[in-house]
Length: 399
Image (cartoon, rainbow, N blue to C red; front, side, top):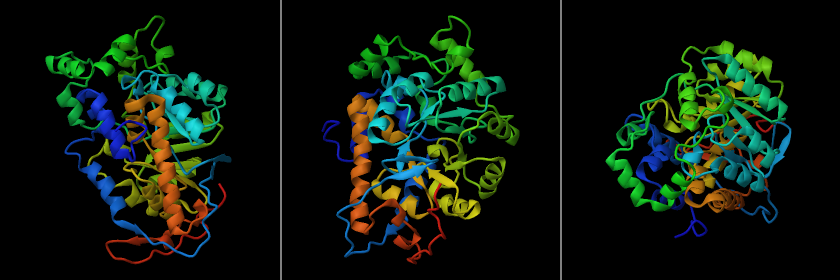
C-alpha cells in the first residue's frame, strides 16, 4: 500500500504510523486521559443512518458551498493543527497548497511552523488564520494586525484551551518541553530513518514562525517554543478577550471550540459570524460530549442564518453528509490531513482530500442529492429510535 493507493483514511493513518516514530504518531493520534472521547466522537456518527431516496436524476451533482461570501468546491476543510513541521518539514505550506488545489478552506494554526505570511503567498484564496487569546494580549492584537494586512479572508479564535488536557501518550513518550532524547526516543528515530533524516536535515526542533517576531532578535526554535508555552494557554481569558478580538478584526470572525448552546448564543451576541462546534478532537476534556451530539442543539439555538462548522471524529464522506443533515454548513478534519502529509507530503495531503471528495460524491449519488442543500434531517434516522427527524426551517439560508 502506498499513499496513492490508500483507499480510505484508515489506510493513510497506517502509512503515517509506518513512517513516523511512535512519539510523533501518538501526538497526532492520541487524546487525553483514558481517550474515551475519541471513541465517543466516532460512536456519535455511528448512531445515525442515512435514508436514501431513489429515482432521482443524480447524473449532474456538485459539492459547492458558500461560506462567508466565498464559494468553495466542497463542504469540508482542514482544521488548524500546531507544529505540523515536526511531522514533515514544510507541512503547513503543503496543506495550504493541497487545500488550494481542492478549493477548500485551510485553517492555519498560529502554532504552525510555517508562517501566515508564507501561507497567504502560496494560497491566498483558501487560507484562514486561527489565533488564541494570549497572556500578553498585545501578541494576539499583532497577529490580528498581520492577518488584516495580508487580507486573510476569515479569522478563527479558539476558546477551548484555558488549560492543556492530560495527554497521557505524550507524557509516556516524553513529548514534553524540554524534550529529552532518551534511549527509547533514539531507538524510535533509528527505526524510522526517513523521518529522522528529514528531522536532522531540517535542524531538529522546527521553528514556530508565527511566533518568531515576539521572541526577540536571533531567537532560536527552542526559545520561540518556550515563549509560546509561556503565553498559551491563557487561563485568565474571558469573554472580554473575544470582544477585543471582535473590535480589532473587521472581517468574518469564527469562534472554535463551542459546545454549550448558551456559549454559542453569547458568541453570536458579541458579533461572531460563525462557530465551529468542536471538542478539540477529544484532546482537551475527555468527558466532553461528542461534537455531533451538540450540533443540533447549537443550530437550534443560533438559528438558520449562522454559519456552523463542525470538527472532531470525521473519517468518512458519510460523516460529512450526516453533519450537513444535522445543521452544519461544512465539516473540518485535522488528524486525517496530518496523516496524509506525514505519510506522503503533497501527494498524501491531496489523496486525503480526494478520498473525502469521492466518498461524499458517492453518498450524494446514492442519497438522491444533486447538491449539498438537499441534506437535511429528513434524510437521517437515529439508530437509537429509528425516527426520521424533522427538517430545520430554512437551515440553508444564504450565508
